Amino acid sequence: MNNDPEVQSVPDKKEEAGGFLFDALEMFVWALAILILIFTFAFRLCRVEGASMENTLYNGENLLLYSFAYKPEQDDIIVFHLTDAEPNLEKMLVKRVIATGGQTVEIDFQSKTITVDGVIYKDEHATLKNTLDTIVGRYLSNRPNWGYDSKTDTMTVTVPEGHLFVLGDNRNFSRDSRDSDIMFVDERSVLGKVILRIAPFTVFN
Image 1: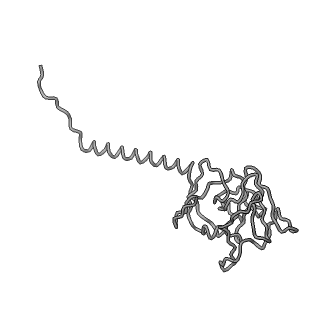
Image 2 (image 1 turned 90 degrees about the vertical axis):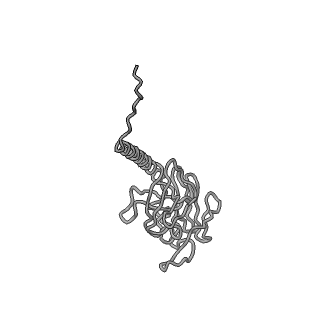
Image 3 (image 1 turned 180 degrees about the vertical axis):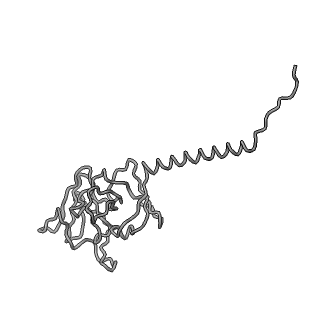
């Protein structure tokens, strides 16, 4: 009978280091893959172009969008894509949702109010600036080029299902749903809701 003590081999230090590096690399690859999936299907990054959303957002600011199973709601700030944009119009625009499908919007240029289905929209973010960047009012003196009744000085439109009526916060320098080149925004063209401004850091509800 062999009574010799059992001898166990001691792992080589190089083998241990190699195994650790392999495990770390595997974890990194998995984490990177998960991150790519998240930013492909749930989140997007974009950059503000122009002054149409001042004083809420400014040109050059970076935004984080939420897009997974997102359904636009009133007052959301969204980024959407224009597939048939004219040459002088940006392909991607950032605007605020004023009304969703089935709702009726009325802009009264005399009383300077917006109503949605007869209810006054609390337009707390809107500004109207002049060329000196001074806030001078709330709505354009230039009337919309569609849906406008000169007799009542109002714009009245009903949003089709699956579409949105949007406005820029800086009303004097915004091309939005008041313009016949944009009109109603198809929800399928929405890239996501703005949830975060990266710098300066601001969270949007």
